[in-house]
Length: 186
Image 1 (cartoon, helix red, strand yellow):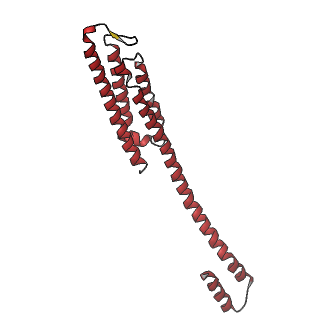
Image 2 (cartoon, rainbow, N blue to C red):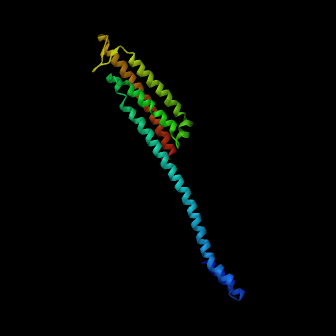
Image 3 (tube, rainbow, N blue to C red):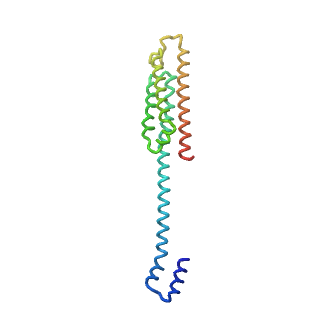
């Protein structure tokens, strides 16, 4: 509106209504509107990109946390004496490619040293599996001990193994959740 008034004053002072004045008078609001539209488009594009990156981070964090939480289901195989010890080892090792292959959260994982911690946890879980395999048990349903007098001791050591595997998993999972909350600004 102010531009219209300025243009009208300019035309009045010129004493005549030249063609260029009429064109300028008609073009100024259009150019102004186009400038505003361009600015809004640029700002919106930046917001959309930030929103897209945040959505990708959420998806990666969700995938990682779900995969780590699924390991919880394989831990009871230790106490139960299930012959499926390898499922624990396999599920722990299966998280490594997911951590290393993440695009949007890799920097955060690496800066906190969580990939190295998970590799160390995988070694720990593998050591537990190897220790259990080396136990004096015969795989069966239910597993029987070669030394029947030491059933309680073996059961207690398996419970201790399960507790330590579970505790380390919970610590790591909590550290992942904390980092995810920080990264996603929740």
